[in-house]
Amino acid sequence: MPDPVDEPVAPPPPPVPDAEATARPASTDLPSNVAAALACFPLIGGIIFYILEKRDAFVRFYAMQSIILGAAWLLFVIGWQIVYGILAGIPVIGWLFAIILWLTWAAVNIGFLVVLIIAILKAFSGVRWDMPWIGATARKQVDGS
Picture (spheres, rainbow, N blue to C red):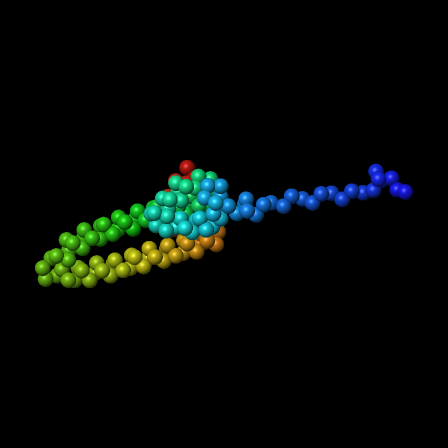
């Protein structure tokens, strides 16, 4: 009969990381990519996830970009309405200003929509994407540098 001390013992299997723990931020109980995609909805989504999520820098980054994009869009809307109210009321050439302003309105809103869709897709795929002119500012706010 062989001695039990002489038999080789198989090493225990290495620990498997818990997929649930690595895929979920601690604050919102959502996977990071889903929380970041939801945070991309301008202003409101960004504010909600920036307040709720304290640990996941990926979600906070997209939330800050959303806040900045939403604020920029809101300022554009207010400014556009002021300028439109002034210029469209000018007799005779007001209609020309109105057409130009409406084309500007359409172009800017299409641009905002394209950036928003790209941000949502990038966030959902787990890629950290800097929005043009906004990403660097959001990164400084989130990283604190």
